[in-house]
Amino acid sequence: MLFFTQSGRVFQLRVHEVPERERQAKGTPINNLIDIGSNERITAVFVRPETDTEAHYMLMVTKNGYIKKTAMAEYANVRRNGLIAINLQEGDELDWVTPTSGSDEVIIATELGKAIRFSETEVRAMGRDTQGVIGIKFGKGDAVAGMATVVEGGDLLVITQRGYGKRTPLAEYPVKHRAGQGVFTLKVTDRVGKLTALRVVSDPEEEVLVISASGMVLRTPVGAISRIGRQTQGVIVMRLAPDDQVVAIAPVAGIEEGDGKE
Image (cartoon, rainbow, N blue to C red):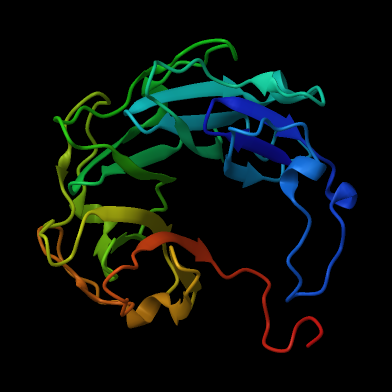
């Protein structure tokens, strides 16, 4: 497993080294398993493919809109104290990482509701100790809210801070060149809040978890979320207390009712 931190470092841990616990257990603090700094937090985790035929590259996107592609082979041997995955400018952080084939399309969206879709072939592969290139441009007060790879025929699911969400067909997002400002994907207002998370979905029966800052979790099928156009606000997906907000969405994979011990 590869663990990426907001400071741009990557750590490695074998799956069998993660202690097995009951479903409702708290788990083990991550800093007991990898040599992560006290001021670092994990922003992306995935299991590294066993062969290069499954994924050739890792694509990274930062909060300030930079994108970087690095060959998977660059991370074959990660030291216990980690490696530099990307060089960051002051005030920037690494928040999204995904494995890619080298010819995928990527979509990046911002907190103020803009999104850009382009081919990853526009991002040349670079070594670990580099900064990357501009993926999306945006104005003052905006920042990247999420990144995903495109699935043909799929939808872009977006969720706002105040629990509003929607699905929009990816066909409504034209393929552009990187480093543009993109097109509108959400009408941001005080009522719905900023765009806070996104995911590309293709199966209406797929389920996702909507997670709030206070720890509330809503499990819902994708098909229950309205499928509407880009320049709309969306509909209520999760009702929240006034002082709470959505912080993430995650897939429900391999979880069945009754799994684990009560």
